[in-house]
Image 1 (cartoon, one colour):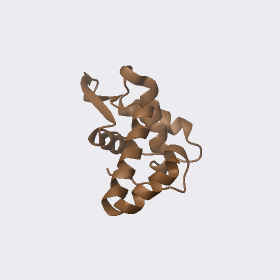
Image 2 (cartoon, rainbow, N blue to C red):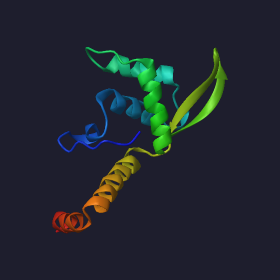
Image 3 (cartoon, rainbow, N blue to C red):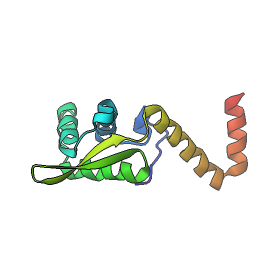
Image 4 (cartoon, rainbow, N blue to C red):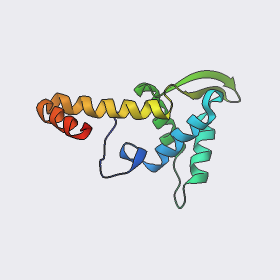
Length: 124
């Protein structure tokens, strides 16, 4: 999953859909205790009003966050086989820094002079 940056949105909505933000915040809240996809799915659907998110969407998002280096997981045996227990690899502050670095790196690749100038103006 490559982050898609939408500058017109606010906060984490710049890079996430509402259910994705809710899912990630839940895993951050659980911290080292972690959460399995069923718990995340249940939490997200309890919090979102007027819509339902599939469990597959939650699992795909959580796995994408593992691939992106935002989450980590351990496997635990349980009813029905193995379950991934997702835990934060980056906390919220570290994730925001990661987003900023990713956006700036992308801009530097395509528009190096303009990005440097814009950063100078933003800092002063």
